[in-house]
Image 1 (cartoon, rainbow, N blue to C red):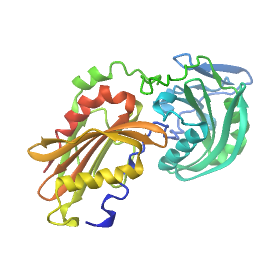
Image 2 (image 1 turned 180 degrees about the vertical axis):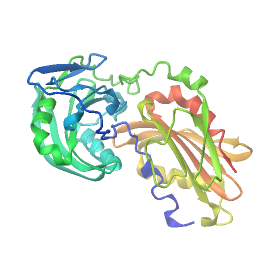
Image 3 (image 1 turned 30 degrees about the vertical axis):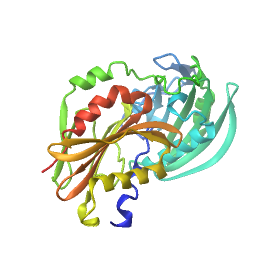
Image 4 (image 1 turned 60 degrees about the horizontal axis):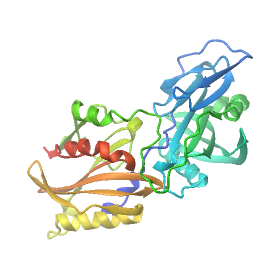
Length: 362
């Protein structure tokens, strides 16, 4: 077996709960500018920003944001994201939340560099302010970000502009951050119920029923040698890993999947599916904190022997759950990886199992 056979596999399993930063098209221009201020409140009434009246609501910035606003004509953007502490490791700190944010940003922003860290106060709440520069979708961008915590949630106030316009826009972006208010504070998660339902503002109450009835679509590897059916709403919106043969996600609902194939040529002839499982388990133990798992079940996936198990743990203080299926065929060992937040696995398990059962080599 080649030493590098498993390297990088579980490095890819970083949950993208902390929003991917994007720069959207510049062609849509907001009209006008003014000195009057305008209050923007999230639909759920949890948070608000106060900005110049030329800004407008812009829900297309990021479908995970609870509040998105922009003045596109001048390349100014702002959004607010809320992350429930129940989705994080129980002792997660603001420093660790910020670190997870920065690390995830580096996955989606090329040549990302963090700078100008400082502590500030936003409406009497301590916050950390910092800048990130890099390229998003081949566009040079400059972010000004604040993270803070209150009650049962962590908050991100993310503002940005084109790198070439950042200095002229910086004062207004900072004012946007300083205007941030929490209108409805979520209670801190109970220590006796660490996996309670998430307070994520996205509606997840109907997702399980939706998953049962959803239309499936078939995804194939680039070499057309294997395929798997996934819900049609899962798309190739994020590169979860450059090593994946097939990958898809629905980030707004924290649903992610990858298929990773490894040729048996790199293993000894006597290498078994159980050996492969043990190697994967060893690799996981080095990458996931507080890992627990179910006993592997022997199943068949389209007539091929497989082992299926669930894994719970934390990566960068984020509580995550995986459904992992290891399939053996004549020439390959293949990993089918589905994952979500721990408190959402119950609702998504059936869909993950259904999708895993459709895998086949062509």
